[in-house]
Structure formats: structure tokens, C-alpha cells
Image 1 (cartoon, rainbow, N blue to C red):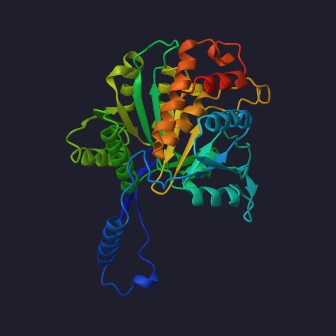
Image 2: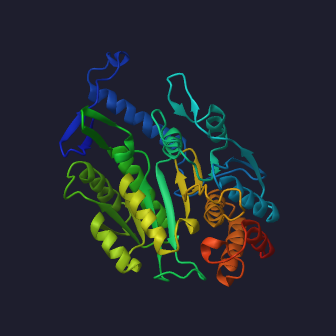
Image 3: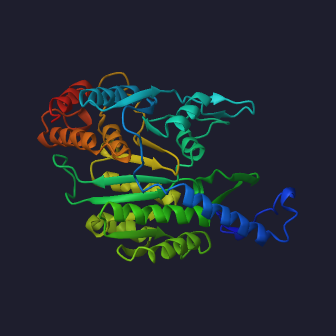
Length: 393
């Protein structure tokens, strides 16, 4: 098996995986061992039903959800969501955990074990904004969470909201970002003084599963088109592999239109006419940039929900910053986290509760009478929260 590797220094090569461990020596060849693994995988797939894109099966009754308030304004907007859920009588029990980095035996900082255990047990979580300290040994907590739980697909719907004045009023796109590799693989080193090398890791497995997620998402949400965003004209091996996986998946979904476009072209066309796009799927770094740009078209990160989906769990989050300048002043806008919680409820098949909360939130935004300062209003986070509760039907 080989993995396509692309170096920032533009040296492209192929990384050969090491031979099978000693316990496989009795097999006549590595290909025979690979076939056995594939047979086992097929059996497992038959036993364990595949998870639908953006949805999960849960038992009835009260469901426990891991709650990560986060830093800065995180605790304030988290409380707002909890109050709205309580008023809407959503059958959820929150299990609150802290993910402030702790030093491990190796001297590096990571996620506390209690938080890891909670997400592993509950399989579902809601997260406020996190701040990673700058310094040696610290790693992005957001990135660490995605990798720890293999949350391979980041889903960010960007849709125009009535009452929020922007350049366009017809934006309705969904960016789906591969969440675990690419330039964010964390593989970089200094070759010699003044020369740093960063590795872009793209694998067939990760590219295929996020492409399949995108097509399945499009079908289940009655979307008509999937656009693969890439730069395979420059990074022929790495982005070429990603694009090939998308093309192969497209043949399995004849009801979904498929197109492929260069990243720079998509950026240009998106700001000119966002109605040209529907669902976009792309590698990690491109998705980070594109999703923020699309958020800007609908009013910014304070209005945009986000979800990170994996095979065995999901974590929904606000993607804006911690805003330490206004933390503790009751000025924060909880909309992004609230709409992310609505995504979470739909993922848990609690659609009635999701629809009620979303409708109340949209009504308050549309009326424009009780808005936080970032939306041009003078209301507090508490006032905004109470207004949404008042409009729950």
C-alpha cells in the first residue's frame, strides 16, 4: 500500500508503508494478508450498519450529551443554549467537561482523559470556542479533538438569513471538509537552520470516506450537485488522489450532478455568484479557508453552525473565536452555537425540537428588535436568549 505525499517544498514522492508485523510472517505474501483484511472488513460492514451522513440512531428517552463550554465567551453562550433547550423541553442531559490542556508524561499538553472518556461514552457533544496557548508543546485543541475521535468530515451550512443584511440574499451552500489530514497532519520539521518542511498527507481511505459522505449528504438532504475543490493541476499526486476518489464515488451517485473545480476558480466564482454552488467537498486546508469565506457571505462566523462527524461520534461547535475582550460582559452572540446545537438535534433524529428552536431563532433575527451588538443591536446575550425562548412555539 502506498500513500500520496506532497511536500510544501514541492518535492513529491511516495511513502511506502513498512512490511506487516512479525505475526503475519506465516502468510505467503503481503497481498494475501491484505486480502484477508479486506474480507474481514466486508464481514464487519455487514454486521455493523453504515451510519447515514449527518444522522445517527439513538434510543428513545433522555440522551446524555457531552458539553464543552470552552473559553472566553464560551461559558456564556453555552448557558444560553442550555436555557433554550430547557424551555423547549429537549430530553437531553448535559455532561459538562473541561478540555483545558493538561501536561502528559511526555511533557506535551493534551486533552484531559475525563473529556475523552465522556465523548467516547456519549458519542455526541457540543463545544464552545477553544483557545490554545502559544508555545512549545501545545497543540490545537480543536485539531486534537478531531483526531482523537476521528471526526473526519466537517460540515458547515452557509445560508442567507432573513433580517441579516449582506451582499447576497440567495446563499445556500454546504462546505464539507476532510478533517484529519492534508496540510494539517502536523508533520513538519526543520531540515537545516532557516528551512522548514511541512508534509501534506493525502490517503485514499480518508479521501474516499469524505467524498462518500458528501454524496450521501447531498442525496439525503435533496441537494442536486457536489463540487470537488482541488489544485490537482499543481499538486498532481496528492490532490490528484483526492480528485480520483471523488470521481470514483460520483459514478455511484448518478442522481447527483458532479463537477470538479480549482480552488482559486471556486473562490472567484463564489464571491461573484454563490448560487452556482450547492455542496462542496475538499481537502483540509482548502475547507478551512472556503468555509470561512462562505460564512462571510451570510453574516460571519457568529451566525454559522458547524459539525464534525465521524463513524462513531459527532461534535458540534461554534467556529468563531473566544472573544476575550467581551468575555463576562453579557455581550456575546450565542446564535452560532445555538444553530450548531440544532444541527446536533437533527443528527440525533430529534427533528421536532430542532425545528422549533431554529424557527424561534430565525424569527428573532428576522424581526431585528432584540439583537446583540455584533448584529447591530443593543441587547445583551441574556435578552437575546429570553426573546428566543418567548418565541418558542
